[in-house]
Image (cartoon, rainbow, N blue to C red):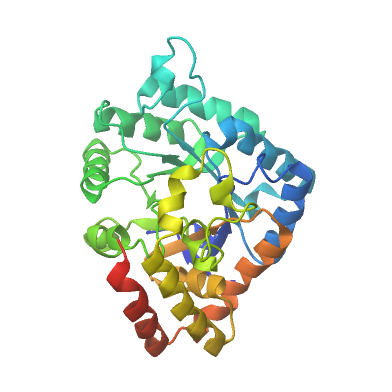
Length: 326
């Protein structure tokens, strides 16, 4: 396993990491989470991603219970969570829904710490931008979260380059803790933001990336060529918004071409796609997901594929994927 600095920070994260979106609580219980966390850790993974909103907070609880059972030294692993949507959606709880204001953020971190059973969380993210709260208020609240010892680093997820730079500059002017990392979607069919929009930020402010969806929600596994399998993510309740993208004819045709390249270099198409994302020098870690041990082991196998992605192979991959990427 390779280890990389998280942006310009001194924190070293594994090139591949393990996330919990959709899977924890919904498909993976505490026992299964403990087994997969242990297997990932044994393979060199040291970063485990989560969010307050995943399974309505239950994903954090599952991961926290699994970590407690594993009894790893706290120095040896990195845990994240993300804030924005909030958990209280009933009545008049307007300050705990879809916001990044100080009141919400100061309470959200305490809730996550309780569910995880941890004294601090390594990485905390603003899960989406909040157009209704001044960025300065959010920056102060996130910086104070770090000053309190409840978190170590903060960053953003799916923010525009303009908003990230604005947050960084406010923190710089006020001598506050600056955003260190961004968590964007990044895969062969979704690359505009990482490769173009953020381009200046890597050098200018030292932005690190912890990217998600390297398999484009499963499209790059090839499982959606003939429609939506009954046991797939897209068939789950509440995931219908994925269907159009997963059944796109041009992209599924491209996956068939990628199969050929994967076979030539001795890996699966899934491993090819994950390794491709990790090959980007600006990506600190690629967050993978798994509902079964076999999926986890398949994904982790991408680590050995990195060295096979020669400039020639990368050019062939780009010729297939770039014309239909967003």
